[in-house]
Image (cartoon, rainbow, N blue to C red; front, side, top):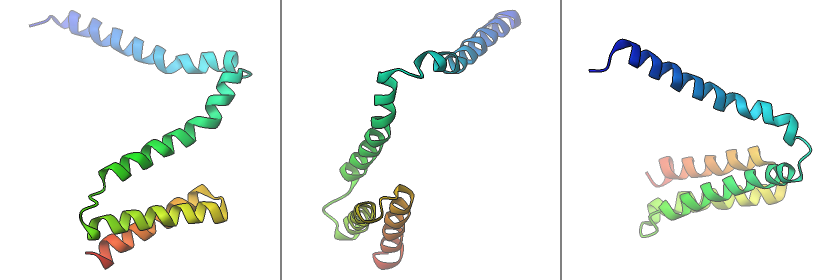
Length: 109
């Protein structure tokens, strides 16, 4: 069994590394503020994250069951239509989620 001093040292080292890793982005912020790469990443990462989430959802749908697939596909279609019409991400996600929840819980339940 490790000694108490060994455990204490391990916890302090882990805490120090964790703290340094969380502090590092704030230290680098001023260096990278005017970086073209950072501006490019800031523009494309949100879209990439949404596309990955959408791909995950579409790959997990059980397309062999109409009762399972219809709410998800209708919710996705509602989200796309609202985004193209209103250009408001929050509104689009709320409407799409609402369509999916209503169909899954009250229509196809």
